[in-house]
Length: 144
Image 1: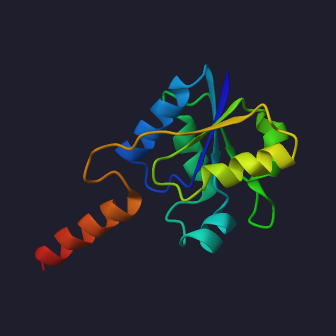
Image 2: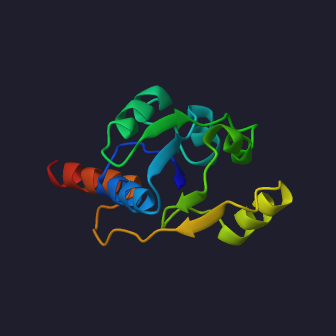
């Protein structure tokens, strides 16, 4: 079974590793789609690291078989499906994707065979990039 996971993966942390370990456990091949820099800018923030470096870092993680850079924001994530050809799309616990709308779009596009699964989060205080940045800023302000 081929699994696809998607994300920004800016400032890799334990929450990312946990997500990818869980995604890999759903099948035997994990392809990770790393968000294109322009997509990150439109949907989240200015990326700290560029998509080429983020892809290299993600691909170096043990659970990951392949990492590719996603499309620019004008192109739907669904257009990458023929490239990845997944059986399962694994969503992170905190990803703001609505599973039902993804399933509906998959059916609409003729991808009835792809299942969508949301994985569990890590129960650690610093399981997200924004939490890590906030903690660094807090520590820096306490030292001033």
